Length: 115
Image (tube, rainbow, N blue to C red; front, top):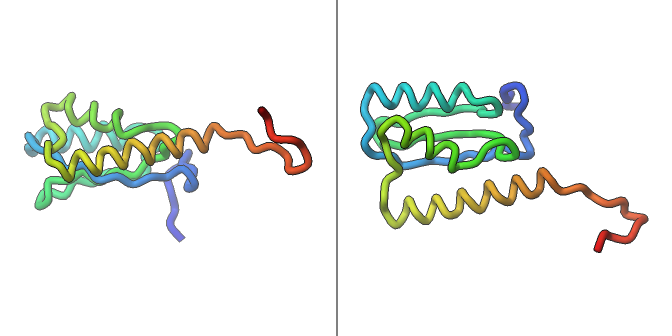
């Protein structure tokens, strides 16, 4: 059984991979540290060979745009390719679905659903 950091709801945990460019030793460390310090981030790793950032976080608290903003703040960027754009679109949709599910209040099965 995997243990998660404090504050992580495993039901809302999402894992994303970002292909990055404009990355160097200094900004890589700064990006990883800043993301890792966010509450409700379970893990963050940089794969230097593939130039990818792997992030796992509770999507009821964060979204992929926040992670991209941190990458860009440190002078790097998300790779501009068809595959990166496609994957990013899927990541936005996943985050939105998790956020919507986290806000949803179930109704009792004996009551009429709200209109």
